[in-house]
Amino acid sequence: MLLFSKSDIGLVRKSNQDSFYCSLIFDDVVLGVVCDGMGGANAGDIASEVAVNKVVENIKLNYCNDMKESDIRSLLISSIKLVNTNIYDMSLINEEYSGMGTTIVVALVVRNIIYIAYVGDSRAYIINSERISQITTDHSVVQEMVKDGRITSEEAINHPKKNIITRALGVSAKVEVDYLKEFINKDEFLMICTDGLTNHLTSREIYDVFFEYNKNEKSIPDVLISRAKQSGGQDNITVIVIKNDMF
Image (cartoon, rainbow, N blue to C red):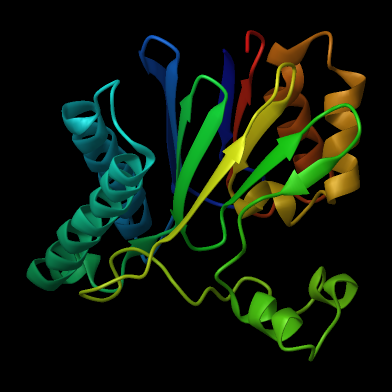
């Protein structure tokens, strides 16, 4: 696996409330986590940082190589629910943290299989030479409107409510976590990102970067962030790129 990642404050925000982690944690096992924090003062920073640190810690502690898919699913979901409780409790104890929360995407890549659990509107995509495919579904007001047929996918792109999410970690005592499993073939990419990227670049524009820089993969996060900033850069931007170059 080839791993590349970067986070940027953008052009408008005063702080970077995104947090991320991407590393090889065992032979042929990569863990990637992206969080987009929300809340006043430094609360969003705290929420996203706690989420990343606690989830990574719990997965490293409990993952083993002979796990069945059902065990991996349980581990990812329980890790996210555990950190939801941590963040929620912190918001109750400390007034400065009241209302804080974060999105999260957790991806465990085991050889050529991707296991993902997520909450919120940070996204995961699979990109190959032919197409880009969003594999997560936003937990957002606009996505529900698209699902119900009230607006089209094209109308959703610039909808005024596009940033209103329907699920986040830490805002209530319990959280619903979505899970999925996908295969990543040789020379395919997994990209995990916050909406600071996808609010400024279309899927086609993202795909074009991967196609243009497929011989210089390490530059892809930098180029994506640069182009998002050229298009406005109104939010923090975080990108993780994982390439399967072996299996």
